[in-house]
Length: 273
Figure 1: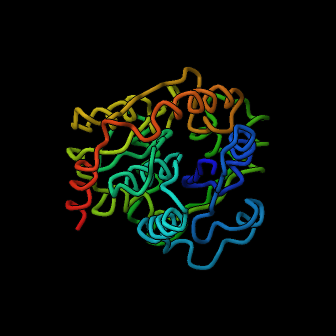
Figure 2: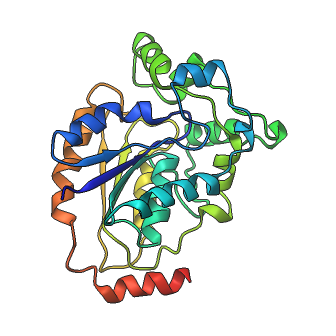
């Protein structure tokens, strides 16, 4: 039986953003699943032109519950790869010992962890703005270029926007910074790989490294790799294959890691009861 990879997208994206990755890892013998968050089904163009009713009310826990249900449907613990908020969801699932290996790319960090970086502060404030209530955040080409695709030309950004961009709920990011985004980082955990884009204007690479460094269990694997010239659209911009190949080379060395003992798994289970 082949290993299963579940790809979890982040805000302002849907499964369309993982199409090339699904093909890439399928060709390497993996069974690949890229589910949509609630209210993110369909094509990005449809979702931009006709905002799903209730999108502004969507919260993090509703998304986590759906992703957890999909993970639990698998015959064995899957590999989970997530981008941005999807990266935080990877961490949340790993904290429950539900996955075999986790890869968090440009991940929103747990426990209200911040970066004192202008791009991070600006974009977080724009999205989470409390004065906007439950009004969805309507992404546009200009904001997509300055935040997601700042390392790309406007022509490249336009193609990426038309192909992948969606609107989203402000409540998701707000929840990431609250109770639903908390993790006990002192517990043992399955192998985790953190990926950061050096030029990311939303989640700076320094926050990914800080996120990785916050895990304290010395018997557990927490690796970090940064990529120069990459923004938040790291999974779709030119050179995405280099990132995917690094992950593909890293994964086989961390299946069923001997140091992750049954005793460690029991500690996680007890902590979550």
